[in-house]
Length: 348
Image 1 (cartoon, rainbow, N blue to C red):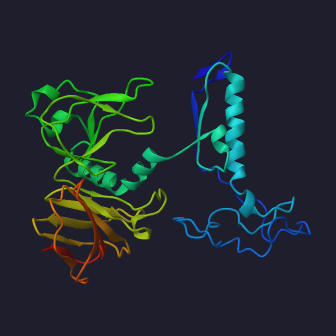
Image 2 (image 1 turned 90 degrees about the horizontal axis):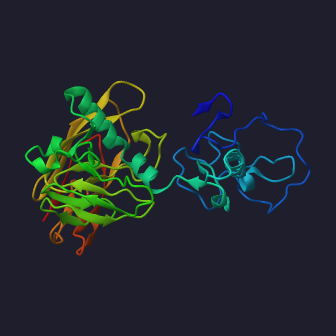
Image 3 (image 1 turned 45 degrees about the vertical axis):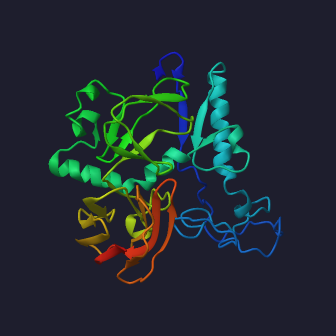
C-alpha cells in the first residue's frame, strides 16, 4: 500500500526471473590471466546435469564457462546473483518494518539462501504440472461457460448441505481444493460430497458419506483430492516456460471415464483434440491434432485399481513395465505412447 508520508508498504516479495543476465558481449577481453578453482572442467555441460527444460544450463543466461573479473567461473557463482538480491530485499524490508517478519520468495538461490529467503516448492510445482489440465478447464469455460473454479454445489446440486460452504471449491471438474483459511492453523475441516475421492499426494482412495472431518495439514501443504472418474494430464516435471511439445506429459487416471484433452502449441489459436476412453479392461487414445507434437504419455497412473492385472500391453509393447501398490491400490504403467497417433492399453 502507498502512503503519501511514508511511501510504499508491502507484506511480502516474490522475486522472479532474477537469474543473472550477460552484459559483456562475448568474447570479454579484460579477463584475468588465471582461472580460480578446479581447472579442466566442462562448465557448459557438466557431469552432474539437472533436468533443465531449456536444455543446457547456459541457455538464455550467462555462459557458465565465462570468467568473472575476480577469476571465478560463472558456473561456481551463478546463483549468488539471485541470492544477494533476496538478501538485500529482506534487509530492506526489516529496515522499513523492524517489528514485522519479512517474507521473500525467490526463484534463484544458492546453498545458505534459506536464512534470508524462501523458495518455490511443493504447491508451485503442482501448479505447473497441471498446466494442461488448467488449459482444458479454461477452454471448456470458453466453449460452454462452465466455471474454472466452482463451488461444491455446482457439481453436487443434490446435496443441500453443501450450499453454504464457500471455502472449499473445485478447480476444474476433477480437483477438490480444501484450503486452510485460519492463520497459523495446522488443521482444516473438510466436507467431501458422498463420492469416491483420491488423495492427491498419496493416491489413496477415500470414501466419505457426506460427513465433515478434521484433517491435519502441514504448513507447506494444501489439501487436494481427485474426484473419482476423472482423467488428469500431468507434466512429469515443473517446466513453466516449456510448451507441451517440448516435455513428456503423463496422464493420471483415477477411474472409468471418457474425457477430452486439448493441447495448445503455445503460439497459435489451434488446439489438438484428444479423447481418452477407459473401460474395464482396455484404455484407448484417439483424436486429431492441429500440429505435429512430439509430446508423449510417459506413464499412466491408475488410482483405485483392485488387484494387479496379470498382463498389460500396448499396441507396440507386448508387456508393459509397471508397479503396483497393493496397499494404496495404485497401478503405474510405463507406456511411452505418442499423442499424435491412436493407441491402446490392454489389461488381461
